[in-house]
Amino acid sequence: MKFIISESKLFNLMSKVLDSYNFFIYDDGKKFNNYVYFMENSDDGRALISLYKKNALGFPSNKIYVKHSLIVEMSTLFPIGEDTALSMIGMWAANKLNIVPEDVIDASKGEQYHRLVVDWYKT
Image (cartoon, rainbow, N blue to C red; front, side, top):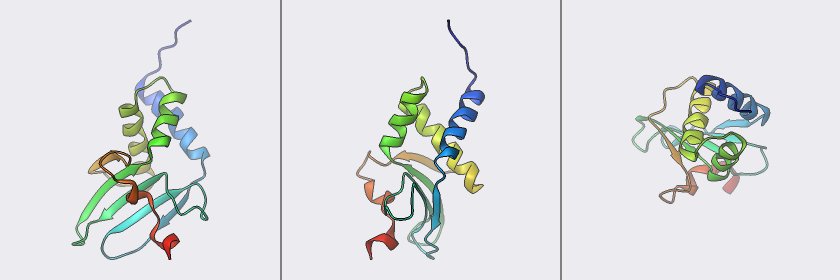
């Protein structure tokens, strides 16, 4: 039996799954290079999603970075490709933070892993 699920219903289902993670959301509050991190717990020091709010000059950036393992998990759980999963994760994070993202990026591409490392954890 085949089921046809609209994109909006699929997004609602994925949102419920992402909501169930009960992310610890941390805003580092810096004036420049400001990030907001979505972490599974506050002890890890690594985020599954991060929002780059302001660049080094203090201008709004609103780029969302997503850990590749979360993209794979969502694309495996739902019958969608990784690009669609990345886009939907970005839409979910943008809705949570009430922003319009400039871009949603797979943090494993282009050596962007550092975008998921929480600064306060390093000290």
